[in-house]
Image (tube, rainbow, N blue to C red):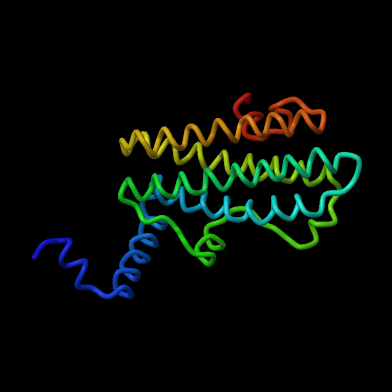
Length: 190
């Protein structure tokens, strides 16, 4: 019996159980780029919610600028969310695809109280979320280089470059240098 036929004969529940057991095994033994990518997708899901919240609730002198910027960022986030998930599927992985999985894997948080945050605090919070996501992306890039999946590596590098650019622009918006207050780069200098 071929692998494909054996797969078809299992129920969807059996197939999902096997997938979940494999993911748990990878997350607890030898982590790979796809496992880190689940965390990236979780972060993107959280950013979807957070960027929409900020887009809707931003107030103050920079309302028009930030209202538009947050919309641009959540649209960009959605594009990367889809690109990364599709690239993972093309590479033979089964990325997270449910709200429960995204919440499980996200390293970011969102909260209803943030709708009352000052505009500058919203921007600083997004910068930190992008930095956390960038660090996960760097880990995934290093792993995928060892795994030899050039197409996934290219996708992750392009995503990281986009994060770097957004961090720089948001930092400039609040009057800071691109790497100012960036712990990841401060540690590299030691």
